[in-house]
Length: 82
Image (cartoon, rainbow, N blue to C red; front, side, top):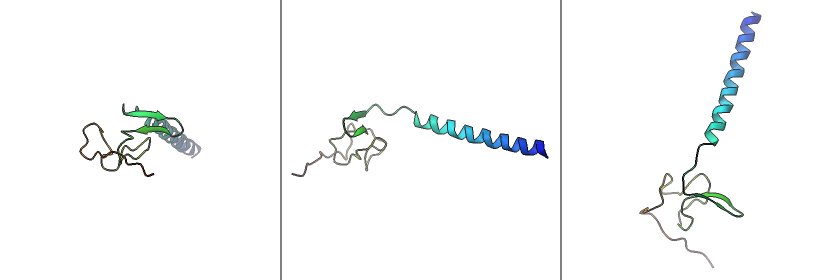
């Protein structure tokens, strides 16, 4: 009974460790080439001059989230409000 309990605990530890390693590996996947750093904001993905850009480091835009931004048919220049 003790061996069985010990094996069960070992199995749970292994699964927890494997889950953590998988999550770390997930977060270190290389990002697209159109990712850049903007001072004071952080990392952004996509063409920031587009009105639909999400201004996020993870999501490119609302209408074309997977990209690419080049030759996107939904592109509209961002209009600044004065």
